[in-house]
Length: 225
Image (cartoon, rainbow, N blue to C red; front, side):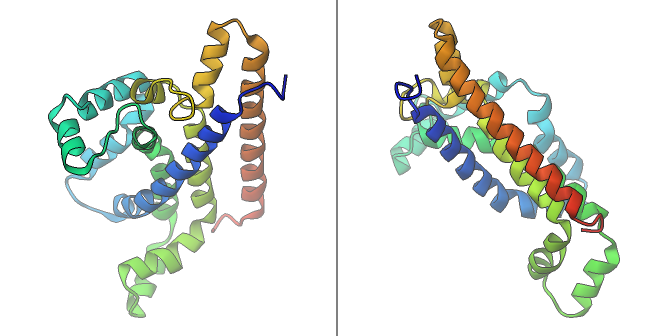
């Protein structure tokens, strides 16, 4: 059974989760820092947009991404004509959908951790002549290691478990967009419960190990961090 199983969906899933988490780190850190300190009147709007994937059905987000980036749409047609970039039924489209859908899982822990830090820490860094970006990366982030780890792990795990978004914008193309969650659905539809059980079991064990490691790590990290 193990030798006959197609491991492609699992490797594709982990690749998608790793790339998505990396992009979310680049995007989520500055966004969370801005949300944690900004007094802008547009902050509630930004927080609402970031949090939408938490309450929005995945199929809804996937459907609108499908419409927006279809080659028949204005945006999708422009991307295809100008950059030869197709985001529907491609791995690149899966990455985009995953980044948007997992964004709050990165931003919220970081925003919470940064908001809990004393203002004196930031003010002291500015007094010493540090820039905002230098203060963020060398002073603030090292003091929220637990929040940073939580954001990384939640983003990775959430991407691994995606179904609705990846199905809508990526479809079910073996080796390209067929991730583990789609493979499980296919095997169940085919009444091949043994293969579905293997896929599901691998994801279950991996998720359990990752979350257990996070909780054990957070027990070792001082609250101030």
